[in-house]
Image (cartoon, rainbow, N blue to C red; front, side):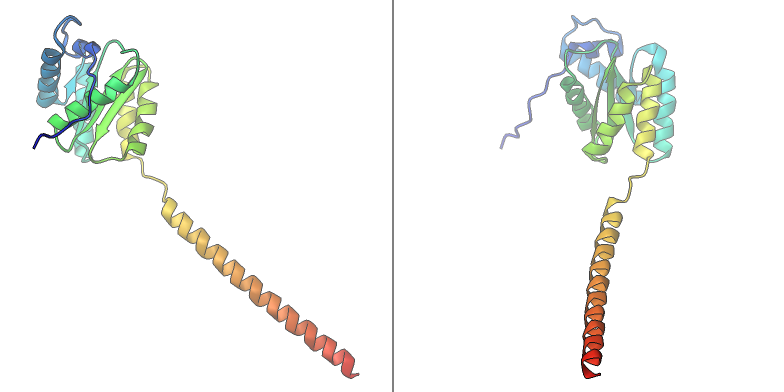
Length: 187
């Protein structure tokens, strides 16, 4: 049986992550990126590697298997960044992957849901540099979610109790009014 995979578009801009020219075959660039990520959790231009590896190590201490790919230039649209993140994520099971380019971000995770990832992407792609963006992304992953379920249950119970109390008060007021009317008629 053949497994079908969703089509992916891996951008040539990814080659800059490992210092290769955009004319390098994409498969060769992807293999180099995967090798760098497997080695140190980061595939990025050399100026950013040390700072990014510190963030990856810190995330690991918090139970997050973070992998980061930084591209020096952006593809025309952001979708290829998610495709690249998915490729890196499949090569590193259980990891959470952030791919950054100037103005764009793409993510993949088998641990975090899409809403959390996109929230993290939003803060990462607006950062002044990849190191700050990656730290903001890691911080977002560690930010606790607001307990919407608990709030919803509390509000539903509160409304139900208020409705019951209102009805009880209406019935008491009606009985009191009937008693007063009967007393007046008996005089």
